[in-house]
Every structure is written in structure tokens, then in C-alpha cells.
Length: 442
Ligand code: 5AD
Ligand code: SF4
Image (cartoon, rainbow, N blue to C red; front, side, top):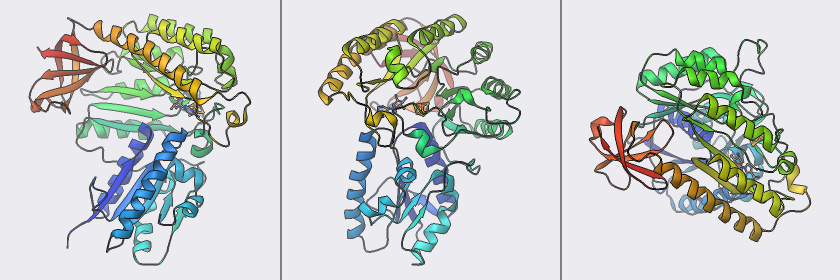
């Protein structure tokens, strides 16, 4: 008998990519073969995101699409919803989409095989399992596939309650994973051949604060501990919160320049102190800029990336111009820029002075233009330099070329052989476009 097939469609952030890798491993261990073809599969899971309205909307569309496929099939097709929409809407998903069989929170994914068996045996029609997110999810092995990147979650949940953000409501309070488990997992993935290890948390800098011995365990110590692992690899982490990024973390990054990648994602959200206050970010424009100065002093060649929200309730043209200024001053390598999007249940959703879609769109456009200039300027600064590149494999656009990234996270395309995949090579940059560098292997 041929193997049953399963498909996972992943939306949203790296946390979901990590959870997909875990679900994949669970399904494979239970006899499923993974496929990307939703038209020929026995089980489809949508691993969902609800951080912005658009992300949640796309999932509704996909569920409609799956209903048609499911109805046309002769054999049973399981449809499951995991991730943040599952956690947020729970059984209400079934009201709008009764063709969904399983709604399961990330706390419970290890129970998937049992639930699927029950559904296939007709012992249950629908299963909704979304326990409150207040415990540490069980430690589960993950399958990160053929690539070079593996991720390890260091803390779950968020205690910050930024006023626009739904995450603290769906992912619960901060819970840190024991240091020993994290170090073991990183060691395991390095041993398996992964070269880039991404440490994940909503707020990585509050790692360990929920432990009884929180004086002894913190993010800097964790980084230092991980850097003791032998091997050729580098570590990245997302995301630190500017209010919690401490100097000891910068010191560790300076001490291990080969092991900790030269890129820092530091979400600013806005350049206006008034907006930052309304967002409950707990830092001012000046605090943020001082921190950037500290970072540049400790780690002179680091590239910076950020998240920005435009059109938060009450944002005036003046506030927005302060964000434009910030983007111009800091010269981020990359910025993820979003229009504010109402999330029901968060304080900002009911704030007065909501900004029109038209203004949001125009501000976003103006910001993108400035950032594109920055990105181009940054790319050009690599011209003629020789950089160390971690090779990821053949380029999507041109299979004959290889693609990789520098420690600063710049994409580099160069002529090379597939055997270089997963190795660190030196490349001389001969051409620079806004997002991509082109070079020659040395
Ligand atoms: N509207 C727009 N952007 C949001 N983000 C989080 N919540 C919202 C929202 N309601 C953005 C923030 C965060 C990133 C992951 O998503 O910039 O850093
Ligand atoms: Fe959301 Fe703020 Fe927590 Fe990040 S720190 S997950 S933006 S509440």
C-alpha cells in the first residue's frame, strides 16, 4: 500500500517555520510522506498567522479553496488548522469552516497522530485542542529539510503587550526553555550538518527571566554557552526588544565575531516618542538612537534591520516624518514595513483617531522609497570587497549559479558548484544591486 501523504502550508514568522518542522517530523514518524501538492494529499495543515489582518484573511481564502478540493475527493482528506489563528479562534473556526477536522494549538501538536487516527476511524467528527498557552510546550524533534538553516525556540510567549499586537493574547506568557535543552538542540543540529542556527523568541532578551535563578541565566550567558560548541556555523537570533537589549549581549557578540552573525534585527516600530508611548514600547526615540550608537561602537560592522508600523492611531504627519528621519539616520540594511492593521481585542483597535487606508498606503510608499535608497547605498558599500559567504545552494532564478548570504545577511550570487552547498567561501563582490550582491569565488 502506498504511503499516506500530508501537506503543511506555513504562514507568518520563523516561529511558525519552526513549528512546521516539528509537525513534519511527527507526521513522518507516523508513516506520512510529505508533499507540497494540496490537490493530491490525505491531510493538509494550515500553520497560521494572525499578526496582521491580511495574514488572517489569506487563511480564510485558503480554507475555501481546500473545501472545493476536499469535496471533489473520493477518499477522506483531513484538514487541520494550527498556529495563531487556531489559538485565537478555537472552535469558532468550525462555525465558518465546518469542513475543518482539526484545530490544534502549538502546545498540543504531539497529539496529532492520535487525533488523526480518531478522525479517520470515525470516532470523532472534529477535534479542537487549544489548551491555554501557559506551559512550556513539550520538547519535540524537528525536520528542517535539506537546507542549511535550523531554528531553536529559546522562549515562548510575550509579556510586553505592545498595544497593536495580538501575540501576547494568543501565545501566552513568557516561558523560557532550559539552557541545557537549547544547547543540546543546537549541538544536535550542528552535528547533523546545519550551518546557520536561528534562536527564536518574541523577546529573546528576556530569556531566563522567568527562572528562579534568573540572576545566573540570561540571554548573554546562553549565547556564550552556545558559542562553546565546536564547528563551522553561525548563530542569528530574532527578535530582541530594544528596551531589553543589554550591553553584555553586545560584549558576547564582539567576543565571538565568527560565531555570532553580524546582523541585528532591532524592531523600532516608530521614530516618534509620542507613538512609541501609545504603542507601549517603553523606550523613547532618544533611547533607541542611543542604543544604536552603543551597538555601532561595540560592533562597528554590524548590519541593522528593523520593523516599522505606519499609520498607528493618532500618527500625525509630524510623527511620520520622525520615522522617516529615523530610517534615514540609522541606514538599516533592511526594514520590514507595515501599515497598522486593527487586531480585535488589542488596546489600539479601539483607539480614536484611526488613520485612513489612503494615508497609511501613501506613508508606507514614502517610507519604502527612503529605505530602498538606504539598501542600495548599503549594497554599494560592498563593491570590491571580499566577503565570507555561507552557501545555500543553487539560485532560484538561475540554477547554474549559487546563492548564499554574508554574516550581515546580504544575499550573494556567484558562479560555483553545488558541492559548495553548506560551506563557507570567500567571494569578491563585483556588482551590487539594491537587494543582491554578485561576486566571484576566490
Ligand atoms: N499592525 C501592523 N503591524 C503589526 N505588527 C504586529 N502587529 C501589527 C499590527 N496590528 C508588526 C510589528 C512586529 C511585526 C512582527 O509585525 O512591526 O514587529
Ligand atoms: Fe508583539 Fe510587542 Fe510582544 Fe513583539 S514585543 S510579540 S510586538 S507584544
